[in-house]
Image (cartoon, rainbow, N blue to C red; front, side, top):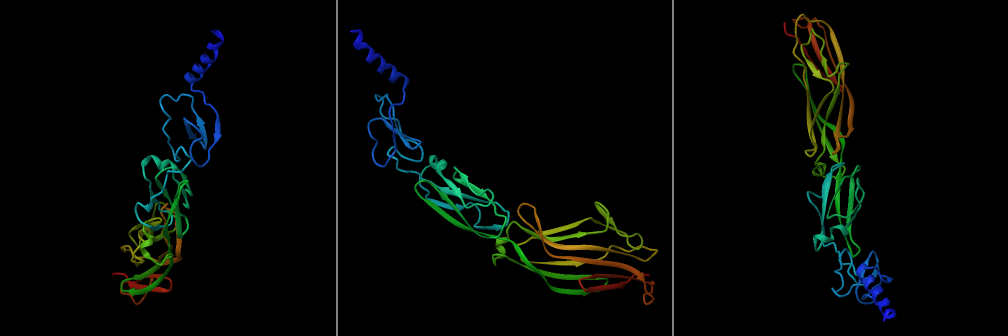
Length: 298
């Protein structure tokens, strides 16, 4: 009786401890026997069969067939943006439990992602980009257009009375569509002679100051902008004075980085004695070959 009880005792101990029994490489088709579960690419047999085989889970079924499928892919905002602007993507799967099975690729920064039904990325260079969501069963891709301002140029200038210069500028998009510049700005940066954070214009003959540097920016999508140069108020007693500011036109991308589009352009301003003016003094401004002057008030 004792010799027969030993095998029964060992079998009971094995079942109670749920020790894994033989492991067989996973293959197509049905499990090799009862109570096998596909885990990490192999069939694993469990000793306790009285409660039925454990439920399959993960990206594959118990017969090693992939059940996680990408049904759709799309951008959660637009299929275009300016350089370095994040675009969020979403992948459709049959059930939320399969989100961990999705692999993303084709991004800029970050270039890829393992797991998740949502993926956000940005690109530092313009062009057509292809983002792909895939599982072990299939993949789906979509293209997005990344644009950047380019080819900024002066299209019109006007010398106005009273020492005023007026300019108009246009720029293009690398994609050919200004709408693809969404998220970027275009503007100017004007550096004055030393003085931080303000440059005080020589007093007299001027009475005023400018932020140093002066930065102004606006939405890049219109594809055009204007720039008007005027003077600070004048104050007596007048005396000769001059200074030069340096201006560049540039765009700012989605991460706040600036790229010069046009310039640098010196902006020269001066007040000097002029016998044809009743006050004896004249103001003049010059930029890129355009000049405007005025006699100072008596």
